[in-house]
Image: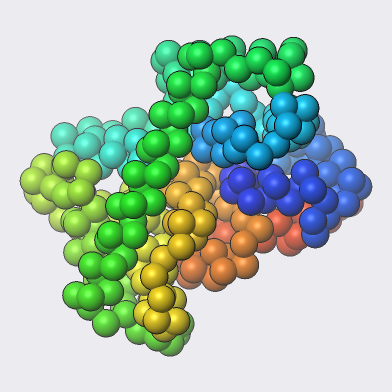
Amino acid sequence: MIAYLATSAFGHLYRKIDCTAADVGALRKAIYGRNVSIPLGLHNLEEIVLARALSPHAMAAQVRLLLSISNWRVLLKPCGRLLADDLRAVGAGAQAPGAFLRGAMQSAVTTGISEILESDGEELNDDFTEALEAARRERETFIADLGEFVAEWTARFAPPRESAAFEKYFASKAPEAAAELAARAGAGAECARYGGEALLALRSVRMWVGAAMSLACALSAENRTMRAEEANEIAHAITGAAAADTFVTADARTLAWVGRVAIDEMRATDLKRFLMETARSQAD
């Protein structure tokens, strides 16, 4: 199993919410036994390291937990960059470049992580900080763009209030939403040659479209606007869709929205169930 954990899930593990030290130990055992692999996203790191609400020691402790159960030698791209890279590749008739970060930013983060561990959180070098700041800016831009899309989409169409109607709603409107996403990424004209269905074959795009439409349905039913933390979980779901077969969140509302987005060989689950399944697989 390749499982992507949203930062909310890592936070619950650290604070032992809905889990115990034994659960974390069982998870580590499954990882060491190669039954579970957890890729690490750049957003996971930047949300913890740049939170500023933690003392250096507490931040370093949380990073150590993060690194003890995930593979930090290969990091996942920021979600906005991931989407843009996938869409531009399709527009150029090329293969999607993949979800993993390469080059100078990857090197800066790897070096920065080592210094955090050595200094117990007291030292953050400039290249590392800038890499994380860049990822945070990309996430904030993503949140703003998603909020704008959801507001416009809800005004143009009438999202169904009944969850049972979502599948039909997605089938009829998703290609148009995918085309709009491509336009927002600056690849609208190039991607138009392939059509919305081709774009939806990209797991990252399908998750963005499905989660955005699902969120629009929920907000319409509740007659309210999107909250930043809701968009933040969707950003993690997009990264998870591109890199894993299981997306793990500690947010029940996100699970409901993301869980109804159909992506082949991928499922969404909450942290408690994920840990129970991991422990059960170890026992079997």
